[in-house]
Length: 358
Image (tube, rainbow, N blue to C red; front, side):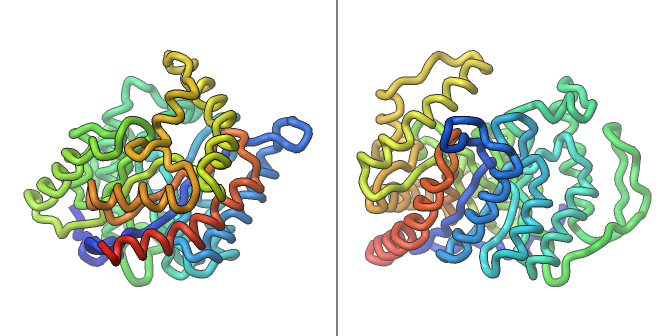
């Protein structure tokens, strides 16, 4: 495994939490209710990344998908464009579906983004909760586990920026070849996104990578045992501690009522559409309101409400970073822009103030 000590993902301490944004480039509708073209969504997404940088947020991540609902299928291409429009914010994926990609090409694309952004690239690797990429790229879902395990092993060797020696059954062997371009000043910051299984947590710790938990339902505090498992496993494997992050959906508006009323129809439509694909029962307003409550996984409300929930997350789990998944179905671009502005200019200072006073 590679040494992660040289990567810029060391824990931040008890009185701080880094705040970022995630989006899948949700394909919304125009003023007449017609589906937006994916090209338009991507152009709007660039403006959202630019605003996130301007208001001082820590990171901006885009998730890879291969379906009509979402416009981002090539995160690195978008991130390269965003690199030219931003100056400070970290730029990454959320997540890159490593199982259906080539680890060498993933590294090369992100090392290119790192060069274009002057060292601001990061990659989050995962298996993905959607599986459209497997038949699209001619892969067998029966190999779901082995594809990720072998490709993660190869990626780790490539990330070390040394000649690669690797053998496996999911792609041709690599016999002592070097991969270019390398990063200039550090190893590529590499996270593993997990959905909440101990096996995924242990795999992440085995490689010594920082971890991000996707908390999209239930109560975030229930992830405390998995957070502790990660810390214990990192120590067991002899790795320096890395950052722990969470990712959850949310939406910020001037008041709690406005935030809930504006988000609910978009949340409900998306939740029920995806739920129908996966055999879930229909959602309700009661479920939504419960998830928006103090202990729920939806960070929805006024800046004050969202700030309190983030501070509670920090106190319950001790995480170093929180990423808000601010897009949701057909939520309008203008609403998302206001959410980003409030998150950076009001929520972030409130969180910092409350943590400093704790």
